[in-house]
Image (cartoon, rainbow, N blue to C red; front, side):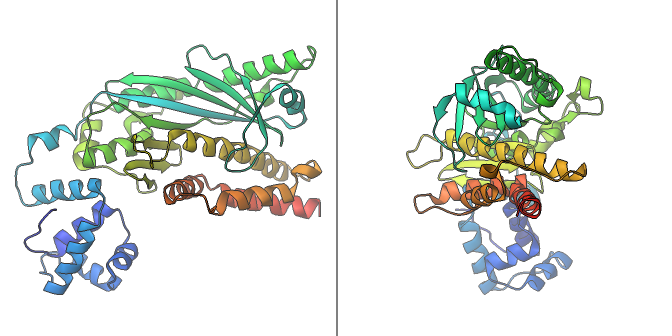
Length: 389
């Protein structure tokens, strides 16, 4: 346990920063007035009263190990004390092994019917969507699968194992492969449709995914405490490590950028963290990063993948409906996949199940919050209800 000899406004605000809480959130967790937090910001040298110091000691003891480690290191820096070399080593760029999961959704509509009929039945995911799978012949992925949904969407899932010297190297690989994967998916979907529709020609442009979403499983690494937290943040939001001004030639931002992120304990303000028992995860707009531990009660990466498959399928479906509205068309869907289908999917994804663990719930809520899928489902549902009451 970290001992704070004297709590002042400076130490209190330091605790708020490692907890990544707003003024109001921090005040609620401590059971104090937001005005007190604001006063600390105005007078950082003010000494806290014994009762307040006890509240802060309790809040610090309830922090995660990563947050406590970050607080210890930043407090040492604040007081001008040397940081132990072992802790410093854990907060630097280092080699690691990452399992990359890429999701590329395509809206097929009626074209999905022959593919769905040819696919192998698969267990429905958290969204309860009926799906079947077909192989995808990706040239370098350890596993590549096409998940064909009965609602008219296909999601291509690529699993690739990468051993890298730094997270910047992984970020560059990610964005450079993003340039190639959508076109490859378009070609593979065309191949599948030609194979299962007796050679009938298919319009290729509509089969190219509009985006790629990634989920990373961090495996072999040397990070601990706040270093691990920073690594997961960078995995979930890799854009801070690269220069993307020229999309055709993504390059590292420059030497020392990743070092500075680890040294400062960087965290994206819009990323959402979740825990899976002793495991840790971070969700950002562009992806998920998760570090599972082998303990029996921890979440597995397969649970994260199963949720993302359904989320991306529903994202593609709702986007198709909303794009029809933007183009001035009345959105029309088969009765089985109209607004009632979207309402059911929304309910299944946003409602906790009796058998669902707390770890699974916070992961699900984090992914839904950052994807903004619930809002899109409601908008698409309203549009379909207005057009097809």
